[in-house]
Image 1 (cartoon, rainbow, N blue to C red):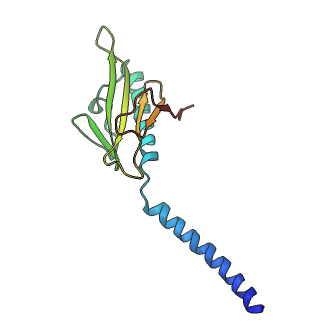
Image 2: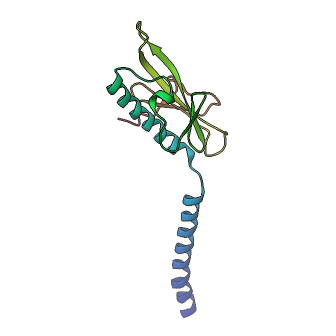
Image 3: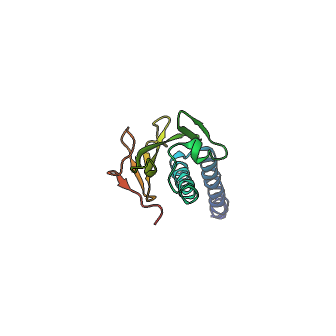
Length: 147
């Protein structure tokens, strides 16, 4: 009986520590691209709002907007998060040519288990998502991340 109690008192903490180590390994070594893509979209949205405050209109490309630290732009596609690329869409202009409306899409480089969703952020800051293999639109599920 004493051996059983000692085994239990030693076994339970060892299992607890082992589970914690496995969870830590998973957290640190598994790439979670989708939350990063949403964070990047929200940062780009904030940059657009600042751009409009300074210039009176929205930008239409990443070179005008400014490329965030650690990001790269090529052919008006921004790569900032390892698993996603970002691009402008749904750009509207008024009669004088000023940009009054925009959206930014986030699409995965490769559709896999941890990056299957496509995202879109619009002028109001609403984030939409779809798991279909296409750019997200405002008709897709609204995540309401900013409210």
